[in-house]
Structures are given as structure tokens and as C-alpha cells.
Length: 342
Image (cartoon, rainbow, N blue to C red; front, side):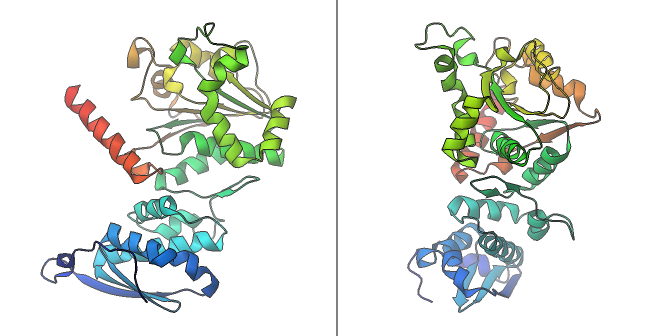
């Protein structure tokens, strides 16, 4: 098969004296998926080659991989994961492939995608898409989202904390498991004093809640989002609007929770009502409120509540970043810099 995309595989990787070599062949059953699996000019195969340092050749519905033993095993699992996504009707872009490559470092990629033996696939179904996990920690998180009453999701940007929570909330709203979806976050960028901004209160706080809107529109048709916002089935508001309420039959998400004070966090958590679920998302390393970490309600709540029945805590790291690979490298660089200056 002609290869038009450039490869950057180092031949030195294959020297027997340096690495144990392996050669593996896999066969795919559905020929109609192979064009999408390989990508234009084999771009998807080249991406796997360059990232894992293997050589891949394709003949018909058979793919042969050669290179260092561990890298070949990861390439095999990655290609199986790519094919599995296509079988499920999922998109296969460079970001999805990068995530599958990252997941291939886990012991069994197939186990991560399908769950335990005999269990149904781990996924969240919404009106616009079916979402599958892209990292091992997302597996843990998605399980917690479906089982626990209160879930804390901690970690850097790009790990899917808020997006997966919104997707789970939309899924439960669609199935009738909850009657309302409430999304909140602190508007600390303006110090909660928003009077200088133009427009009514909604206009003033909307810029700070934009990421929540984006996730909603990605999971639900725009006309449904607008209709449900108008009817009150979906509510998006700053955390100050939660005071004095009891949130029953609701899926409640608090984003950017590291910027809540201890008093705000306690107030928010005690809004919990019958048949409700709460997800609190935040990055403990990005506290913007006066007083920094010492005043953050997120760290305080996790310290007090971790281990309490019905409460789950999922911790993401830079290895779980599922945006463009450079995002993970940027986060690592900044965290490394902070570590040196602390």
C-alpha cells in the first residue's frame, strides 16, 4: 500500500541489541470501515507509527505491525480501539486516536473500553452523540457519575471533568431520571460585583458560564437547549443564586469549584435534595480567590468528606488530558515551573 504521509520512525528503535522485536498481524472483519480506520493517505496509521515507534503495513483487511515488543502490543490495542469506535458509530479524529494511544499504556485497552468481562460497554448516550471514555481515569469517573450521590472531580483543564458531568446530566434528563439540570459556577473573575457590566443579570454572568453552555449544545440539539432553558428544566446560574434553595429531583453541577469559599461550598452541598445528584468539578492548583488555597472550599470539602458513604472523589492528572496533546505538555510545563518556584 502506497504511503503518502511522512513517517518519522527511527530505524535504531528496531536494532535487536537494543530492543526485543515483535511482529503481530491483526485482521478486521468489516472492509467498509477500513478506509476510515486508515485515514486519508494512511494518516491514522502514520500517527500511530510516529507516536509508538512501530512500522505498520496493510494488505487488504490485514494489518501487520513490527517494532519493539511493548510498542507493538500498544499499537495493536490502539488499532483495535480505533476499529471498535468505528463499529460503535463514533468519530475517529486525531484527538480520539491520541487518547487511545495514551490509554494503550494501561494493561488492557479492551477492558477499559468495554468494562469488566460480561459487562455492557461504558458510555454516556445523549441526543447528539454517544460518549465513551478516553482515559483510564475517565472510566472511574463515568462509573462514579452513574452510581454516587455526590462526586468530586479534581484535576487540570482538558481532562473532561465538566464535559462528562454535563453529558451524564443530559442523559438523565432525557431518560426522566431527574426533572431538572442545574449548572453553576462562581463568577470570581469580576469579584462577584458585576454591576459595571452591561445588560441584565443573565447578560452579566453569562460570559463566566459559557463553558457550561458549550457542553450543553454539544450534547443536545440547540432548539431543545433553548426550550428547556425557557421552561426552567435547565438552569444556569452563579453559585450565589443557590442560597436558600433545596434542589430535589435535579442533577446539579458546580464548575470551577476551587474558586468557592468554604462558606459557599458548605451552602452549596447542603442544597442537596431527594433524588438528586451533585458533581463538583475543579482544579485545586488554579485557585483565584483572595487567600488562595487556604480559603478554597473545594480542598476543604474533599478533606472533610472523602470516604463518606455516597461521596466519590476522582482525581485526574496531566496524563488524562484529552484535548490536543500539546495541552497536556503545557499543563506539565506550568506545573513543573510552579513546583520549582514553590
